[in-house]
Image (cartoon, rainbow, N blue to C red; front, side, top):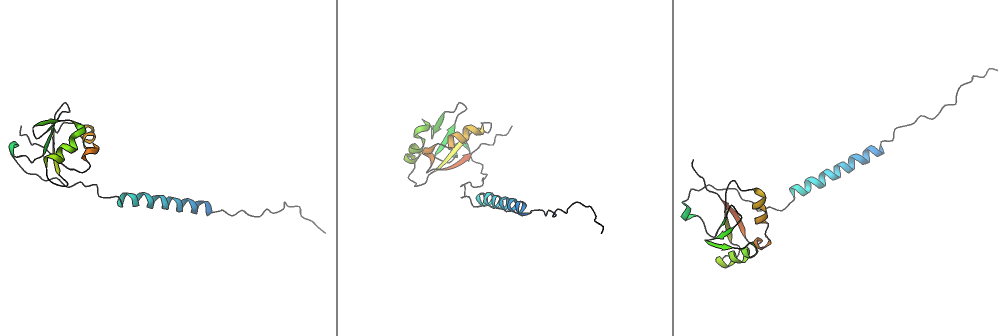
Length: 135
């Protein structure tokens, strides 16, 4: 009787794909959560710009002029940032008044964002007014 000396066979290992499937499912969940928040977000209230050529005296009212030094002038009267919202509400009879903001084109965007994030302007619709200067 002849006996062959061989190593005992180890059972073959199969790849476990459950870890990869769980990763793919989690990635899909994160993807749909992220894109759902982007597309399901409320309307930011930004309307497209309209171009109209008006003389400076005919600019729409109420008009908030933002000076280079940050000074605020509402319809010719200096106003403080803290009372900006109530001053606009007092100047108009509308429930949701429109504030036209005139600011220099070279102004920093952070200054404009800081001004418009004023909590007293929550009930006011904002429109930017620019002046086209021919050189």
